[in-house]
Length: 377
Image 1 (cartoon, rainbow, N blue to C red):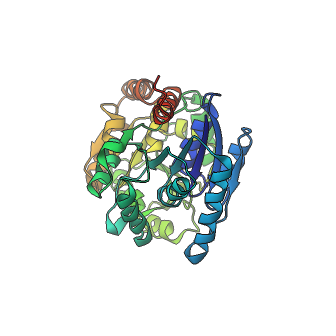
Image 2 (cartoon, rainbow, N blue to C red; image 1 turned 120 degrees about the vertical axis):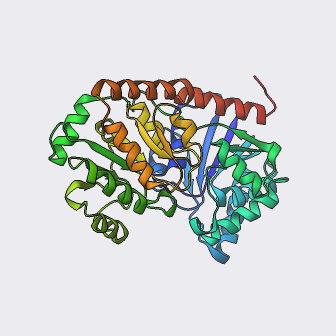
Image 3 (cartoon, one colour; image 1 turned 45 degrees about the vertical axis):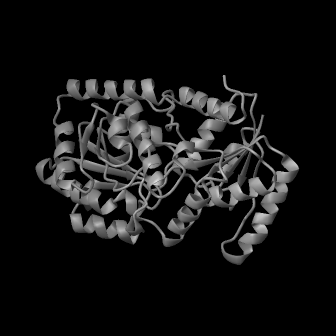
């Protein structure tokens, strides 16, 4: 079964990593081909290394997007896939329309966004969401959402409710696992003592991730636990980012904060921290929570998207924006006895194994494609 995946772009992001994990494990009866509307980014070469064709159309915004749309439609007519599966809003819109114009009868969209508030999103993004809502009754055969909350948010915006299917993100328990050697080596790299409490915040700089809120919570936590240090990794998390520098300076946590920027050893960093903090004001299904939990790391999170469902009773949950509460929950986790925190971490890892293990999630994708093609298993 030929499946063409169309995605807006291929940087090192959550949607792109989920697509990569899916392609790494997809059954051989599926023949995938990946098209990026823009560039290959960091993930394109990794997909290509799997032996999967991947191409970048380099579509520019504005009037020139029309010529890119025409090129995409022509490519799909030539390829004649059984299924086109689009990822992210611009791909849903352009890729979905191109697939229909190319005669593809089975089109799937993807929802991976849990907050559509005006102050948390670009105006252009919300405009595309509105267009997709109007087209959702006609263009997609089905709409795959990575979270229950994201599905509800989009139904409220006008997406066709009976087309939405929930398949969560998945996590590789072999790659993300408890690792005492990682804990030791990271602390050596950061030049902190082996017993230093270490809180992690891993992600990218985006208004919905609420980096200012993290530093507010971190400052309150540090006033109670002066030995605690903070590890931050991801795109934009470096001293050259003015927003990060200002927030760190205002908190007074410079000597206790380690800004690592983009890293290729996230499993190692996850296994090294004592607790993960998620300060988001908007999420669909947070990848970093599943990764931390797979490493046996308890999480303190805001109740956005499916975060409370992901952690269940293995972490702590506060209301969105409640950084005083988050600081208190982080303190609770850090002051547990080593045995208590280890037990909580083991339960977190088991929760991932039971609900979000990558092989089981890939099987759900495969069943989704089989049903879409009219071949229910």
